[in-house]
Length: 110
Length: 152
Image (cartoon, rainbow over all chains, first blue to last red; front, side, top):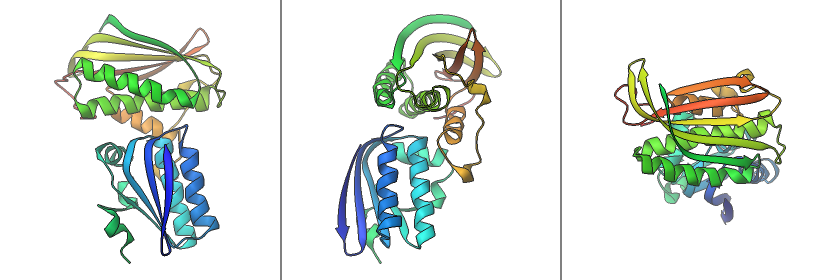
């Protein structure tokens, strides 16, 4: 898994690629919590277009990021969910708790 | 049910970095057996989650322990489901019997509980046992099932 960060005004966009699993999800969790809890960014957007695989530890990291965003009053936004990622989120029955958009433009719109 | 032919056998370290290796191999194997793309993803997810649980709960994160994985093509009949199937058996010598792991409420998501939920939703049969000091997890996914269409 690779995470590349971009900044657009007061929005952080993480371009994530590869597999999010037990080996890599701690890195995602750390990046999310740093951006939300330490830097207190008003919005963090995850571009998941290039994510090939996500497992329960990856979903748990997203949930932890979502909880952190609610704690600090910011937004965690996901976009670019492919079939694999969407299936896993649906299987977790957690898909409705996330703010999910189709593309980056929608995700950064005020 | 009759034990069919051995398709693949692996012995791997309990290192999280090995998970992607198993996923890639299993993805190829399930596709060759004729599972749909969605079913392939379901089987890969279930095995990945099972291995994750072994690494985390049976071996408590120690990356140097051994896990055996065997894959058989079998024929199953009964409970309204029948047909050829993929049987996966995972064995470890960890201290925590898998059957003692319990799922958490989805509201309290952490790795482990959600993983078990994924395994149960993805496979037709999920059985835990402990024999001769080893934990054994048996997973079965029916090919072209005439009954349940789980994971498809």
